[in-house]
Image 1 (cartoon, helix red, strand yellow):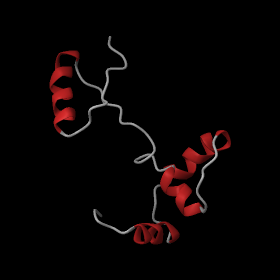
Image 2 (cartoon, rainbow, N blue to C red):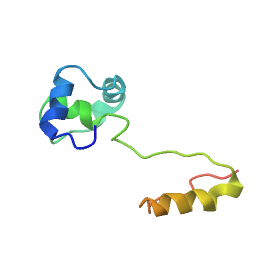
Image 3 (cartoon, rainbow, N blue to C red):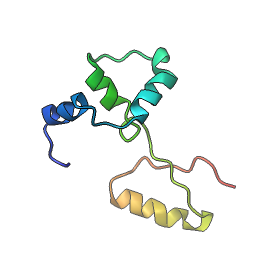
Image 4 (spheres, rainbow, N blue to C red):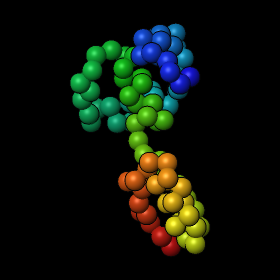
Length: 85
């Protein structure tokens, strides 16, 4: 789907083609935020779990350096360890 124009993406949403998690996400936290965009289509896209948050990765402690090397090579320079046991 790379290269789709925004109007094409909105068209998919209008046809009901979007993740069900968008609605669940909005139900969970929507009352706590205000979106500065209009329309149900924009809300569905902005609350899509694939676009609205970070990525959590779990790996063995001895592979952290290798994982960070891969992330940094792909441009993910803000990766951080958030917990270690």
